[in-house]
Every structure is written in structure tokens, then in C-alpha cells.
Image 1 (cartoon, helix red, strand yellow):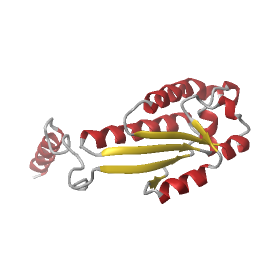
Image 2 (cartoon, rainbow, N blue to C red; image 1 turned 90 degrees about the vertical axis):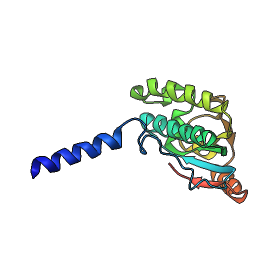
Image 3 (cartoon, one colour; image 1 turned 135 degrees about the vertical axis):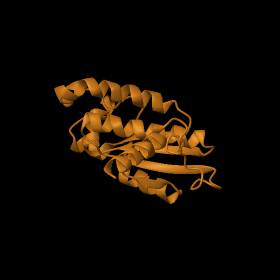
Image 4 (tube, helix red, strand yellow; image 1 turned 120 degrees about the vertical axis):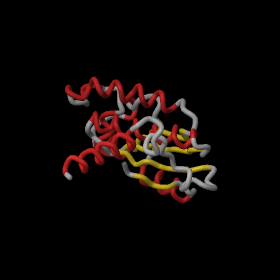
Length: 165
């Protein structure tokens, strides 16, 4: 009885993970039915370099997935809080153990800034002041805004969904 059960579990797992299975072909076509465009403002605060890079990769993967499924993305990425230190050129403000990943973050943001569906990448000047960094040290692909809360409210008033990854 136990052997038969184990064999059944193994068979189900093999089918579920096989190339071409429903899991491997997952998409969002049902929920996206009738949707032509999605507008999203991402409020990014992550101060851990690896965590921030992961979030940026997922945001970019989401953008690409929407496009692949025929939906036009309009994405805004707004940085504030501890993330501020990781999106600047002054490495003295970045923890030594985060500097290598910060270089990857800068490269990812440069790539994303040129990608279809990216409307804006912004940095809050209030966060710059609070994190004791400088506006002139913000990565060149990022636009410094006065107050990202105001910016995020304005995007939401224009129909952008708010996501805090």
C-alpha cells in the first residue's frame, strides 16, 4: 500500500514538473483578459543590496511578462528610505559588503531605464536628506523628485496602481 502511494506521488510529481506541463506553461491570460495596459508605481525602500537587486529583477521580469502576454506596461520605480544609499555613485555611503551588488544594481537600473514600458525611475530628495547622501550622487538614470510621497500620490491620481515590493 505504501509503495503504491509513493509510486503515485512520484508519478504526479514527474508529470507536474515535466517540460510542457501546465506549471511550466503558466501565464496570466485569464486575469489579463481585456487588459491592454497596466500602470504601476513601485515604492522601493529595500536597504539590503541583494534584496534590492532581487526586487528590481522581479519588477523587470513582470514588465517583460506583461509585454509577452500582449499588455503594455507603464512602470514607475520610486526609491526612498534605505534604498537611497544603494542607488548612488558615492561608494563611501554603501556598506563595503554591499558595494559589489550595488554595481549590479546600477547596471540593472541602466538596463531597465532603456526598456520598453519603463516610464520613470525616481529618487526622493527627502530620503536623500534623511540618508545623508547628495542629489548629485544619484545614479544618472534616476530622476530626483522633491518628495516621492507626492510623486506617488500624483501617479495614483492618474490611475497607477501602488505596489510596495
